Length: 227
Ligand code: CTP
Ligand code: MG
Image (cartoon, rainbow, N blue to C red; front, side, top):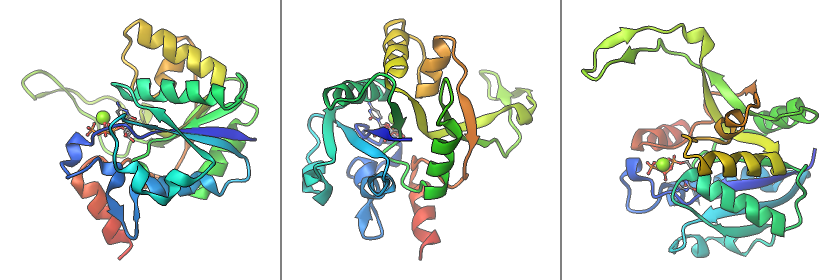
């Protein structure tokens, strides 16, 4: 199906401890955000793409893709969910309809494959709710108390890690995010907002290496893999 993309890219990358927001760090010849954008810009079904950036972002204008007519800027918000919501508002101004599909994908997740993207799109094309790429948890899980000691070992077969892209229809996603944020719910991805309004997103198993670059060792791993 045709689809729109929102790329939240307004974080500061505190855990990365770099001299700039992590999406502007280099992986090979290009920045992480350029790799992430490239995953989508070649797709024939792409209707348009919004990047949510912090208001004082001086890095973005230095990139060649800042001139790309297919990319629109939105302003980031305090939390990721605010940045996404601003991106969804911008899509409406671009002419997106409420039942159009929107893919929300972390700017800091540059290793999405064509295969995973197409698997998500084809699996969910006629789904009533939408869903997300996800990966089964690999390690044994531990629940801990305030003293750091283990209180339980839950059955890991019931747990998956939520990745992106997450794919929902514009109208329902905008309403879910708006309502959940207004109620002060803990919303760390789009699916959790949909769940908050009573819907059940579908998990689509993806590749484990579609990882979000969060800590310095994540980027070291990517760089070493290609060298
Ligand atoms: N993001 C955003 N707006 C925010 C916070 C995060 O658009 N207010 C984006 C980030 O730029 C990133 C994605 O959401 O692409 C995932 O967030 P995360 O990995 O937490 O990135 P940061 O918030 O930048 O990193 P940290 O939490 O370590 O500061
Ligand atoms: Mg963050």
